[in-house]
Image: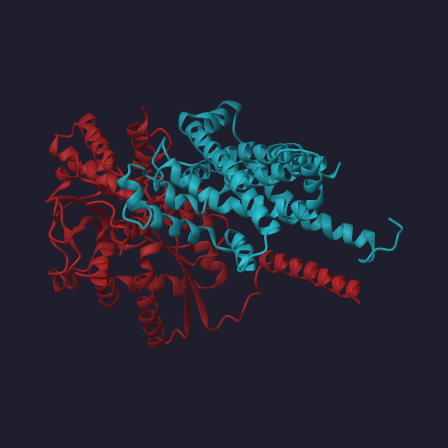
Length: 269
Length: 344
């Protein structure tokens, strides 16, 4: 603490940090737990484990997982192309990756629904070959892939940049096949970053509301995501029930954050 | 230099964040009492209506020697707006879609008395609306009445009753029709409504979302809509694309208004707030409502605009359902009729 730091005053900055985190994060979360604590244990389990809510967990976590895994594969490819090749328009593509961060999610949702609905630009030909996208879990997955892409690319990219291509060349010189170079040299170095990215994308997807609610169609038991059920509870002024589901989501988020920090530790060691 | 500039940047960032937080958290300082500012918290489709009405009221209030009045508006889903008022949004008046939402404000916050609905004429609803069908030009599926909506192959678009006030009226209107048809047999009414929702391919979260799905994306054969939304869609988007079908029976939707008394007392706007709502019942107020396709209560104004609003048999929520306080839990809360028709 005694070394010269850029920002003066450990006490002052720590004070800011604690106040800031309390106001922004801790107090709202405490209020959430407090609201749901008004429920008896039975009412709590009823609120968080009814048939309909259980169906929404399956949908939310299932589509989020599929979307995160797809992003794991294709986000890695995008990062690879952006780091390892020089080509005209690379800067533009690099910028494009951040678009899902910057775009309001509702805009993304409306745009995706327009494109993928049965009369849309992509939805029509897909419907002709028997694939329905909008208003099905497939559509939800598409929206979640869209919002999750930057997480994977932006975590893998710096690690890949730091990785010297010489190491791969050395591996090849020592007689490794392409597959061996990939699995024995590249993947171990990249895995922690890739896992961090995939988990972040997953965590983001689990809580996503704005873009999904348009493309989901919100059919009970089929395409209702968990955040939507929180909203429906609020519409009947069931604050405690809404808070109860939110607490479950909160616990899941904490678990995911724990995983992310674990992967980051792996990356550093 | 680089370190210093970074320090300055970080410092400004911290100060900026703190300012943002404090501005958001601290109440705005009270302003001078003159001119009067009224805050009207309303629901989504009334945007155009109140934009017009506020101008007219402001002129009226000044002509009465009331001084300048500035009406601020907030619009959103009816339930969401009610929750905002309960949580402390300081509305002087609320003009919402359902009495149930104002009941919730009275129950949970005590900002207005529980008998608020008796304070103004006609259940505190200065204008009414109803649910009609919007179909594509030429009515290719020959949709005439509620019976046609349960036929196989007809796609019906409505928002989700769990999240949309308008969609609750849709379901209740269908239920009311089925009760009449089957001689008050609730089991058959439930089957009817279940068959209707089987024909619904997508349940948007709000009324405007459903209009977009039907009008913009070309999904569905018929849209269940507020009468004023249907008129808006036909007049704004083309008489050559859509037409309105009026069913034999529909429901009388009474969007209620109320002064949020404790807030108005605190802002010293009680007189202006009351006059603001009273003026809705005047000939001028009724004319403005009619122009925006809300059915006027005033007999003379109603007669003048009779050609605009087709006659139909209207059931009311009080007669058939015993009011919102009974209808909401029975139909729309968890485990209610709407949940039952989707549960296996």
